[in-house]
Image 1 (cartoon, rainbow over the protein chains, first blue to last red):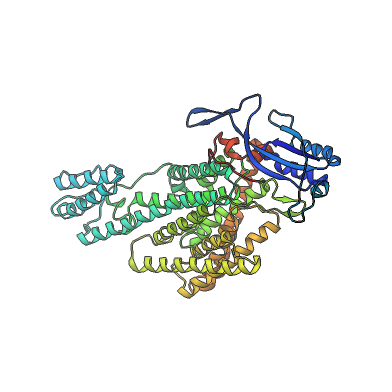
Image 2: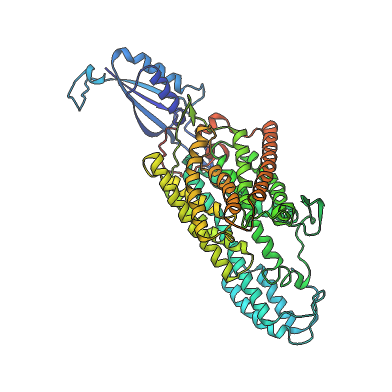
Length: 113
Length: 472
């Protein structure tokens, strides 16, 4: 079992969801996040002064998957989020030792479903 | 304004000096003291030999001058009230659209006030009220660029039979012009390119609005046909509404609104702002309709404000009933639109319909607006704030209702007005906006639309420091 954590641009969330749904990955959790990469942000401007924005808005996805779903999930996220420009985001694949479904008490791979 | 024909009497000079300050001083406390001074000077002014060049033989009495002042005070208050409608529009539109576009909405609404007033001063007022300067039948007239107040009392107490002076006339009508333009900004929200929108608004408000308005209010051909539009259901609201429809058709819907044949709701981000907006607009309507009496006449103004108010209330109830029935749960945004629908509906006939008719007109408008919102969506015409449903559909309804509920006006002349204005405004707006589409494009890129127009068009955020959670 793996936990896939992905940081994407907020405006790509809809596209990523669509791609994941098309690949039958339905269980996703989404949170707001802030972050930046190598470029350390961009410039905004407010009333004449330049504002250096170092922490940019991002969206963080967390998807717990069984081994056979890992590749298609990564494909889905990439397909939805890639624009070829800086800021597309990153995907982290973590090992997931255990998982429990609260309603039924199932454990392990059945709990991920 | 310079009253050059001072005849040298000390009292006259004082009164004029005070009057000039009256025109330029913004503080109300100062204005009130000056007002007292003017009234006091009024007696001094006309005791003696002073003659204003060009005036008629009979001097206005103290009572007439006092009445003139009272009338003008009400008209000025109406100016303030119609002005505050812009704040209402701004907050309503901001509340019913997404947070990532709020700066853009506010910017457009701020610019429109400026564009409306300035173009009205430059050409609009002259186009709308040509007076004797009709050029093409009674369909097009132009009294010259800029503003020129008639000299002496012709620009003051005799300008409108003791109701208001020239400058009040300009300012009051100028506020109306800006409200017509702002209707479009709601319908095209969240995807229109700022520069194209500003150019469109400038051209439309400068030329189309006043020419069409002259037909009904500038003693043009519609007026000659006994067409009645008291405060502008057709001449203001539907003028804005037809333009909004044309622009929305040229522009297309927002990205993600109609997907795979289904309608995806795009929620407004701030219901409190929307409610504030509607109540500000209702407040403004007291001036919109109340000031359209064009004097402070207690009977007329009090009656008009009553019909206006009951129509708004009926609109709310009508919309609630329709919304609760059709949508199973009462929708706040529908009810807010219902209030405005009632107000737009009564705007054509607030002075001539009975109270019972006013309630009926408002209630029907409330039901109609709910139906219209749902229908426009079914037709895949995307209107984020319901501008088409409120201003276009209910503007037409209000105008026709005058023919239905008032014995003095026929439905055919009302229909003629609605039709003529509709065809003209729609075609002009479509032409202008389509031309802009060809020349410079009217829509932002899909990327920018997703990121938000605040970042794309303005490089700033409305809610800096806040995390906005959206999925669209």
